Every structure is written in structure tokens, then in C-alpha cells.
Length: 321
Length: 292
Image (cartoon, rainbow over all chains, first blue to last red; front, side, top):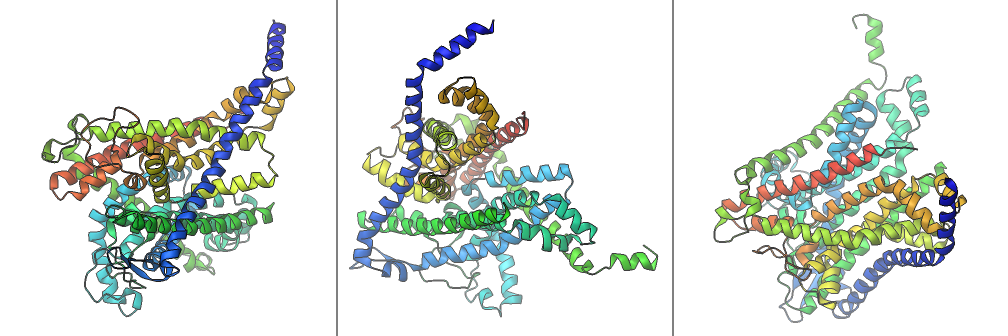
């Protein structure tokens, strides 16, 4: 009974060399598209950078102005570049502790059922599109956050970053940073949870039998063990924050004067929001080239963040194995 | 607790830090849960009056906000997502198959591909938007069409599909492949009949998550010309279109109150779609756990 089947399979194996070759070529081609796309993006945006450097020079990166009607037109993204970094820092300051604590709770304290529920909840948070988060931030978070910012100004106003002279608390980097934090929390939490889950149980048991409290077990066992993965997760979240567009666009008042540190003062910027806000009203191909160049700067920024993240993660991986 | 010994034992070194830490944990949990809960509650409450069949049955309307619906956005989303999947799925899965099954894992080229895919997955969506505008809309003259949107979104989700598919393939034990090859199957037959079917649940999960990411994306589509007001269903690849996120974005720019509740209703619709996709993904994942 089995004989004819084997024979048929052998026969098909013998005749399908051509099929194999076609298959091989197809998937090789498919694999090359990925590399091709990355190279394509880099080269394309890089080429667009040349005319920008020719007309604007390095002042494209160091000045902060965007005026297509002046003669000659001035384009400089320093404020936006700085704004992207400022927003990311605010988001990190909020998101990192919350995500770390959340994942510690899920891994070491929560009962099985609660842990599964929370895992799903975090996945759910990650699935919410940024346009929805942005709207929610605009209608719900921002009005509430005005009061928080007034309190910050009232009680901590002596710290320079919490100064606000204008009394206008709408469209501040603080709120935009909070929105970014909400976007980063699920990313960082899910990576951190997986990393902490992999802490060898014998290490945890050893720490507990030595009388370590929860806190010291984390401090001396779990966190050092998972440090590489956690940093990688944070960088992943950072990459997301740097490039986020719509959600920030809803709640940040974009101004070109650089807002250096007054995070509860209205006005700020980020490269991604610059692109989306200027695209609709771009005056001509030159301005669009400038926006493409801004996109290239953003692209390089996220690329650097990711290369560093990968390096950290892979190095700790090597140390362990 | 009443004996002095017990009291001393609970106040061992680090007791305060431990308590503070526990409260901080619960606080973090509260922040996460409350954020999500207020988000869902406020959106559902705001959109409740417009959550009726008219939302699906009617076209958007500028002059009659009370009668406007989101039909063109729904069909547009389905078109765009469908075409995106059509482009990205075969390419992504085949690329992953090559990288995982056929490429030599130690070659320098292979490592270069690895790193670049990792990086592509992290490129901000707005950069894909710019790229789509310059390449698909302008250079290939596709204009503001479904084809341009689908190609742009396909680029966006391709790295995600490749990464998740590779992970799924990696989870298939070596023995299955070796057994198949030892019985005389060719590489193609092994991949097609053994490895791919075994990895299918994992691949499906990743693909669904990637598609749901594309369905919620607004920023790149804004650049490549999805328009907020489209009062017809798309009828082909070169047709104009709008999608749910874009429609939501557009409605919120209108100051009339009807439109903000309409936007909330559309958000609920979009969230239901995305949640359904996510629940399906995690259901597949939990069902298919470790059969070998």
C-alpha cells in the first residue's frame, strides 16, 4: 500500500528540480527586496539632502526658522530637532518607571490570571492607533493636564523647567510628552516583561532563601540580569516616540522659537509634526525637498537609536551564552 | 504580629523600601489601567448617539452632519488593507522563508540583511509617507490612489511580517525538516509541505498584527493623499479613497458638535475592528502553543 506512494514521491522529487530552482530564485528575490528597500530609502532621502545642503548649508540643522516667502527662503530645523529630543526625554521620564514597575508587577507579583489579563491589556494598549490616542489626548487629557500644570507651576515653579510666564497651558511639550509616554508604555512593558520572565528561577529562589526582600531581589538579581533587554526595549520605545506624528500634532502648538526647557509653556515642535503640518501648505518643490531632508534627519536619528539598541541587546546576549 | 519578635522580623532592613516599592507597583498598574479605561469610556460615551446602522449605511456629508455616515471610509479601509496584504504577505513570508531556511546564517550578507530589516521595522511611519509620496504618487504617477496607499503601507508592514514569520519558522524543530529531507523530499517540498504548515499559526498571528497596524495608520496616508471627504466607494486600484483613521482625523477638524460625536463613533468602529484582529491573533497564538 505504501509502495506506490513512495514511488510517486520519489518521482516527483526527481522531476521537481526545476520547481526547486524557480522557488529558490523567487524567495531570493523576495529577500533582496528588504535590503533593497532600506538602501532605497537611504539613497533616495540622502540624494534629496544634497540640494538642501547646497542652498541652506549646515544652517539647515543649526537655525530655527521656516519661511518659504522670504528672499532667499530660510529653512532651519534646529527647533524641531531639539523639540523631538525634548519630547522623547519627557516621555522616557514618565514611561520608563511606569513600564518597569508594571512589568515587575506582572512577572513577580500578579497571580496567573491577573498576569494573563494584564498581558492582554498591554497588547490592547499597543493596538490603539495614534490618531485615536491623539484625539483622546486633545479632548480628555489636555483639559485635565492644564490643572496639573498649574499645580506644577504653583508649587514647583522655582525649578526652571516648571516656569510658565504666559499663563497659557495649552499645547505644551509636557502634554505631548505624556501622550508619547502612553504610546511607549506598552512597547517597553512587553519587552521588559519577556526579559524579566526569563530570569532563572534558581537565582530568584536563592535570593529569597537568603532573605532578600522583593526590592533587593530585583535590585541585585532580576534587573542586572535583564539589563540589556530592558535597555533595548526602552530604545525601541524611544524610536517610536521620535517618529510619532499624529498624536503629537493634536496636542502640541508648533512654534519655531526654540522652547529649550520650559516644558509647561505653550509651544514646541518635532520633526515629524513639522513634516505633516507643512506638507499641506508647501509652496513648491523646493519646500517639499526641505521637508524630505527633514525626513532624512529623522530617519537617521531613529536609525542611530536602533543600531545602538541592537548593539546593546546583542552584546548582553553574547555575555550570557 | 503582637509578639515583639514578629514585629522585629517585619521591620527587617529594607522594609520601608519594600513597602514603598509595592505601592509604586500598584500605582503604575493604576496609571496603565486608568488611562486605558478613561480612553475607552470617553470614546464610547461620546460616540454612543451615533453608533447606529446609519454609520455604516450612509456616506460622509459636509452639509448634513446629522445624516453623515462612514461607509466610504469603511470600504476604503477594506480596499487599502486588502491590497496591502496582497502585496506584503507573499513577499514578506517568502523573504522570511529564504532568510530562515536557505541563507547561510553566518555570512556577512546575511547579517547585513538581518540588521537592515530590524532597522526598517523601526523607521517612523511618516518617513514611509514621504517616500510613498515621492516614489509611488509622483515618480510612478499612481496619484492619490488605493494602489499608492497599499504599496506604501506594504513597505511599512513588510519588516514586521518578515520578523514575526522568521520567529515562527525558527520555532519549528530541526527534526521535522531533516526527517522530510531524509525521506527524499526536495527543499521546496520540505518548505511547502512541512515547515510552512507547522509554522502557520505563528505566521498568522504576526500577519494579523501587522495588518492591524496598517489599518490604524494615518500619518503616511495624510501625506500620500487620502482625502477626508470622499462620497463614493472605491471601485478600483486607481480610485480615490479615504480610510477610517483619516475620516476620524478629518471630522475632528470640523468644529460642529455633530462631527465630534460622529468621529467618536467612527473611533469605536475602528477600535472594534482592531480589537477583533488582536483577539483573533492572541487566540490563534494560545491555541497553537507547542504541539510537538
